[in-house]
Image (cartoon, rainbow, N blue to C red):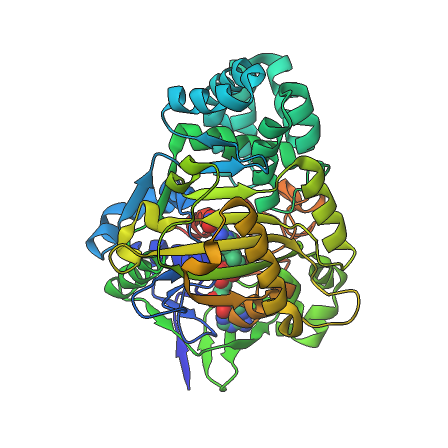
Length: 514
Ligand SMILES: Cc1cc2nc3c(=O)[nH]c(=O)nc-3n(C[C@H](O)[C@H](O)[C@H](O)COP(=O)(O)OP(=O)(O)OC[C@H]3O[C@@H](n4cnc5c(N)ncnc54)[C@H](O)[C@@H]3O)c2cc1C
């Protein structure tokens, strides 16, 4: 079977769907081809433990999307199709072995109070960094929303210079290149405040000593106070179904169980795709939401062999992630009692532990004490569980892509999950007795769910500086274009990187006239 359309989108991740929705709304006939049985990629809500307990299997925090260009353009349409955001004024906390915690709230006075209890020496720095973020945020947001490189980015750089002066620009460059540890040492004294910051670097693949980590850690930590956190009411999948509805009501189509195995090329230009079951969809514009390291294998051999195409295979994954989903009888009894009010509770506990976990994982060893992000979505969205009950979203950062002793993730996942629960139990004694159901998704499972998550890398490719900014994903594949006419890219592997933002999809849609 062969059909034609204006734009083909390969992959129904947040960016593929965002591009498709914006293009469909601008009048283009769009067909999205998704290999899975459901759209959404790394966004998927399912009752994986017990009936009535809705778990965001992968992404939960929708802050990037809420503040991004797709929400700005389609917010009303998405709301009409049932997408609603649930805000939280208590986005995250870090808990420590001595039973203390620091909690970040949108109420700056409350955050200050929390800091004063455990790290009074850092309160002034915290306030200074918060005020500074207010000054630089508009420029950073400008960069993150611009094609990279582009005249738009140059204009933002010029505006930044005019507003902040040469020293201010140099400070920003330094921030973008610093490790979290360097930035933390420069600004804070208490190991607890430093850990509060560094936990956010671990959400990406920025262990404390990796250059480039400071920017993300700073933005997320102080940004938490500025913006709070938002999650999707009833689960993040409501965003996916709303985007699909926008595509369909504008004449587009989302076909699932349609894995693309060949991108067709005619005289050096994309001409369509072929799916595994032999269907062809023809168009001279193809947008790929596929990890670029997988794309050479989807191209004719002569195209794939061209050095500028083949280099995409060198795009490196970040380290792996494991997810543990728990159905709970009641919220954890955190030794740091107030932690039960926060959406995320980070367990590092300290910078050196995070650095060690990362080095172990990179060398193929299972970290003895991995960094944990314990998500408590039902604190702000009780609709995700039966009345009085809760779900826990536990993200284990960072883990080996391959285990050095040759064991497989299928063999060790449940045993390792027990170790993780033991660690949580140290901070929230009695957690085991509250568990009504549990589902473990190992790094291998992540890749089974979504081919883009190579080896269980949740990021769609490492974000270290050699693969970021105008170098993402690899030189020659920037500006959301593959080195083949008519073949465009979006997704976590492209600028501005991972997360449920939709920005790369919006940038491609803009390039294509939406
Ligand atoms: C466990 C986990 C937790 C996360 N938590 C958060 C969070 O809380 N907040 C946040 O902002 N981000 C989070 N992220 C990151 C975020 O979810 C991802 O970066 C983002 O969703 C990736 O979107 P994408 O557009 O790159 O597409 P993807 O989600 O990678 O989807 C791509 C789609 O393409 C399909 N596909 C691949 N190859 C083909 C092919 N050949 N033919 C057809 N279809 C194909 C895949 O099946 C998939 O559905 C998390 C990620 C993971 C894995």
